[in-house]
Length: 363
Image (cartoon, rainbow, N blue to C red; front, side, top):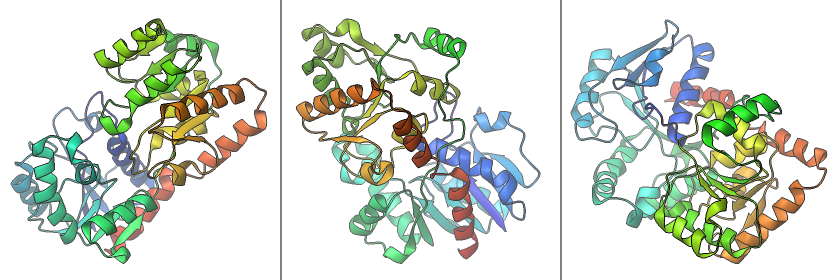
């Protein structure tokens, strides 16, 4: 079978959730799918172009950028030229006039249920193109039962058409205890000796402002590290509570450095109010770190009983959860660390890829 996969969202210096999903899917197909031929659509300077791929996997350069009107006509032309039997659109982006069978992965419905947080162009694109593409898709993949319920309820898709394939955690995510490595990573990103860590962007539903408000309100004197762009409003808030000197913003953290950063963390916190899956908390658990997450959307489904939950809309609840997690992290907790790590290992990228491949063949 000739299978085309869109990988244009993988870009230099950016490995957000969808990009990681696609990268690990392709990486697993190196070994488990040699009986099919894959055509991977990429833009210029895509990091995948620097990697050596086996013969059954071929990179196909396209000029159309991810989320553009040009993709509506260029991708169908490429698919015809390839002679693709199946096109996997692993995000909400797909051409309306798809000449091959279409399979889409919808990670969440952010653009639909939270339109106030996105540009009018993004909302228009989702309403006009994405809804129609989902209806034309032979099957829809998603990453949690929460997202499946959202897709069925909001888009009217038949439940039997939607398959859940959980994201995975790479084996690289494990406790790193090498002091030289820790010192090296600390110097690169300007990290303090001990800290609370939040890996997130500044989109409103990520709820970072509420986290900082809770941290400022609490009597916690441990620094808070935000792996996101500096935000003047957040800095001003911290300054008003006399905690500006304890607030750190880092530049983009390369994925190969994340296991070390997680391992240096006293507590990882993820206050998001809407997630289709939420990979960072699972990665932190895999490194044995105490995790605080919002009791919202897919997060309870993903982390199970291995995290401390809080109400993301109540800064006092967040503050109490942070204090509880710091108390846990301060005790000898070898057994708890092992439980977190064992739980996270249940989520495998190879398992996700095998399930996806089976759905390709069914499709």
